[in-house]
Length: 257
Ligand code: SF4
Image 1 (cartoon, rainbow, N blue to C red):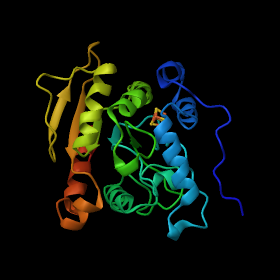
Image 2: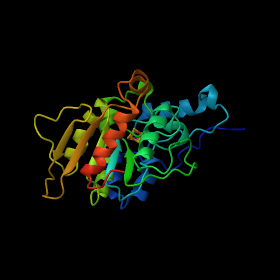
Image 3: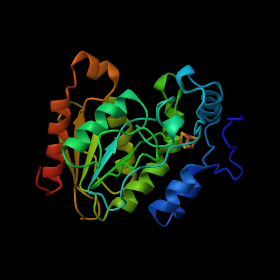
Image 4: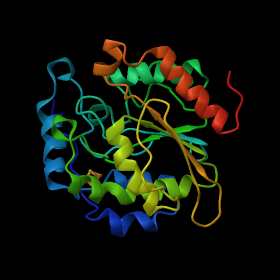
């Protein structure tokens, strides 16, 4: 069986040109999945999809950029850094199919933000409630490290996504310091004022960012990343993760359950 991922036949070359024209999140998500703006990441994501990990050798990898996941009228967003090579780059859905996702979706389910605790594929029936998961870099990078140029090239996708979510968006939970650093320029490119000095990342770090047009402010909430390095060592426990999402719900004006 040929499990080579389908090549993108109509690639998007520059997110800065394409993203502002997306009229809604469905259109934006479709454009994101056709992006080929970063040569190194295109080569890597497709190479990983061809070579595969032994445990997934019978599966067809997605091997393309990952769109956001969750309802367009969510009040809460989760922002990590970039997809995992054998997680989202395999399944096509953020945090789906890897150990980080196992921890994340269990916590979301426990606080009522996800319909089920497991996330194994885009066809597993999981739905999110009032929360959307996205990232500042949409392609899996080698060693989980995008270059500054790749991060900057990808930025317009998230700027437009947050812009389209703005009517309801109240809180962004940021997973990890790298995601925090990548997100602040995105917010400044959108409509929020990032204070100087910039707010520092930390677990449960909280900053309220006013909108430059006088609109609703945005709450930023830091959370240690759900990486195995953090969850296996106890730096981030399931209880700590639940508390972050409960706080996010409170900041968004919803009762915790
Ligand atoms: S990282 Fe972003 S800008 Fe670069 S190819 Fe992937 S989707 Fe496009």
